[in-house]
Every structure is written in structure tokens, then in C-alpha cells.
Length: 153
Image (tube, rainbow, N blue to C red; front, side):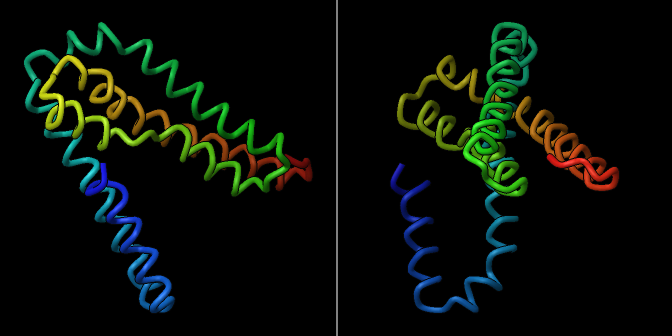
């Protein structure tokens, strides 16, 4: 947990405190690197269980799909209820909807040495990419359409 979450966050905070300009320049490459690591860990878990992934998806697919949709929706709706701007509501929905599957997979596979515990996180990591992308496009498209017609989100 410390190595996966706290160390990178601490280093990022320290870098930003020392050199805001460098932190701003490094922001995009660090985000891309984070996504690559997340995808690599998810793919590693999925490929390691590729023979069973369809069975796992049948077992937990519906539940993780509903959980992902509920997380995205509640994150967005909750932010809007607190009167956050559209952009902040979208960011909140993504933060709530895109749970840290890397941490869940790492703990399940490395610390607990348990594939069954990793199954929901692995399936969620697949479903989450598809649903979060679709949700993001839908919510931004709805906002753009409303702005063009003069309605307010």
C-alpha cells in the first residue's frame, strides 16, 4: 500500500512544493505512466487467468457492472447535489467510479496470494474502462448539447 499509493503521492507533493513548473511539465507524462501501470497490472492479472476469465466474468460480471455504474452515477450526482461545477462533477464521478484496481489486484495477488480474491477486481478493471469511457463521453456530450441549446446542466 505504501509503495503503490503513499510513496508516489508523497513524491508528487514534494516535487510540486519544490518546483511547481517542473510538476506542471511532468503532470502529463506521470498520468500516462500511471495509466500504463494500471493497464499492465490489470492485463497481467487477466492474462494469468485467461483460461478462466469468461467463467469469472459470468460469476461477477453483472455485480461489478452494476457497482461501476452506481459508482459513476453517485459520484456525479453527489457532486452536482453539492453544487460543484460540471467539470468537477465529472472528475468526481471518474474518481469514485474508477476504483484503484491496481491496489486491489496487488494486495490480492502479492500479499494474500489469492486469485479468488483478485477476481472481482480483475473483472472490474475490464468493465470499468469501458463504462467510464462511455459515461464520460455521454455526460460531456449531454453537457455540450445542453450548452448549444441554451439549457443549463
